[in-house]
Amino acid sequence: MALLLAISVFGQWPPITPPDDGVPGLQGFLGIISVDASPSSPEPGEEVEIEVEVANNAGEDIDDIEIIVEIVNLEDDDGDDIEFDDEFDLRDGNDDTIKFNFDMPYDMEDGDTFDIRVSIEGEGEDTGNTYRDEDESMQIEADKKSHAMLIKKLRIKPSSLRCNTDFEVEYEIWNIGSNDEDVEIRMINNALGIDYEAAVEIDEDDDYSNTLKLTADELKEGSYNIELEIEFSGRSETETAGLKINECDAAEEDDEEREKEESVETRQAAKRRSGKDADINVFSRRETKSSEIAEAKLVERADFTNEDYLFFLIILSILLSGAVIYAIGAVIILAKR
Image 1 (cartoon, rainbow, N blue to C red):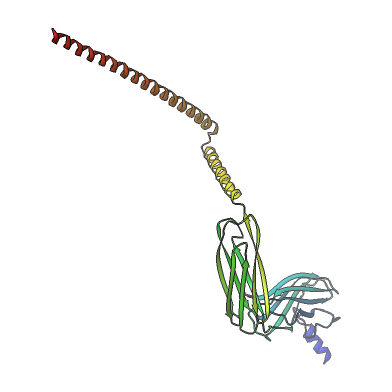
Image 2 (image 1 turned 180 degrees about the horizontal axis):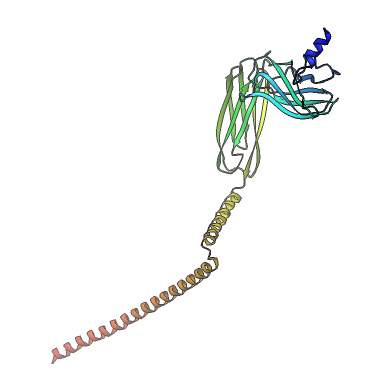
């Protein structure tokens, strides 16, 4: 009977792993020796490391072993399945430990359990036999605190600017505990003129976000830190973001310099497209010089004509005045006779 059982197990093609193959020292199989999760009761957002130990007792080297690890019914914060895969080779008689890491999602309930499903499959180098094994013996359990808050985001847009420029401060707060919370929010920075306080209620598994619109009014050049602090149920959390203020004059000079460089680059590009850089330069210089000479002559000619004309009018006025006086005198003399 024992012989028939052995034939029924070892005579299959391709070879498969029997249910008890994970026992170290078992000959003729590729086996999952152990699966471990650390920590086994993670909190929301906590990093979890999965370790899978695999042993090769197949009597030959096994190439391209594919390992797939799946956290059953658990999705990350983007709604994607948490699943990993990798490939490795394993020489006969050796074992190896494969590690995977992920962050525990925030959207879960305290005490929820999730199975860790592991499968491996590889091909013998000598015989071409396919070896497989599966394990689903390990679980992780969610450990959600009664009171826990997370500052998910604190962002300054833009984070680098010059004075007298508007900017925004965005923040987002998540309630990752198992109770509703009354939250006090504070953001104070005297140098930046920020004096902001708010009181909000955030339900379990809910969040709160807001955007402050501010102006960097006559600030000195330098770096500034903005700290967001929240208080809830006798606890507190803080987060800091940085803001850089550039020198106003330097920023304006940089803009003017960039405009000049862009103008020069545009002219040079136009010359390259025409393929006549030298001709255009010579023609431009000649044209400019000729234009300047013509304008100079025109001005000189116009000035000379105006002076002549004025002088002529003066002489003519004198002559006309003399003629009139002479005529009047002659009339008086003739009248006396």
